[in-house]
Length: 199
Ligand code: SIN
Ligand code: MN
Image 1 (cartoon, rainbow, N blue to C red):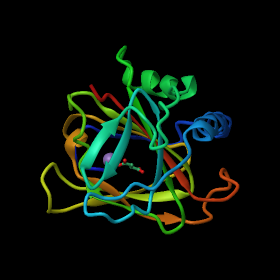
Image 2 (image 1 turned 90 degrees about the vertical axis):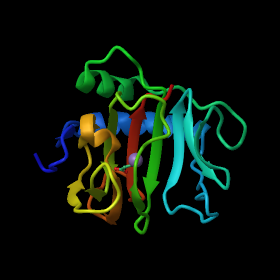
Image 3 (image 1 turned 90 degrees about the horizontal axis):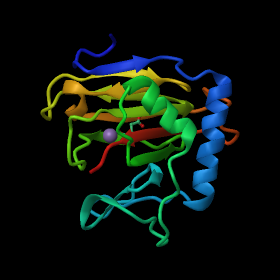
Image 4 (image 1 turned 135 degrees about the vertical axis):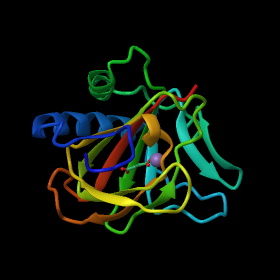
């Protein structure tokens, strides 16, 4: 156990290189239809992480706050969540319930994601499953309340994390990317997919 918050499971190397390539190809198919965009924070600053999504909902943010939306900013519905990605969800959670959102984050060499809770979903009893591809990312996790001690762990390509239990509402973020640490993405950077039950 690399984090002391209960309910945080790291499955290091869960996806072998062939599986990583298959998921990457599926993500490319999604992004061809729903191109990456850069949301603004509610205070109006562009985020450094670029985002897209698959499923009934995608996550979005602007001056009106954080929320799930049923369309890409270009006005088209999000593509379906690829079967390869749903297989990871079912394999690790054993749940029949399908996630309704696969958020796709892309981190260039200087991107980061500040400490936050995932709390825009209706029912926090469902876990969040996160798949990392490409460059290593330094993941940080704190507690269910802001402040206090945090712990960090480098997530690598093929690692899959399940955040359930106490970890479901724990503050977390990505401090930095180790540029050039993986050759999976030809142009470098890190992709992270998070599968969420939204409704
Ligand atoms: C997220 O919190 O939405 C993404 C976490 C990650 O990139 O590992
Ligand atoms: Mn999050």
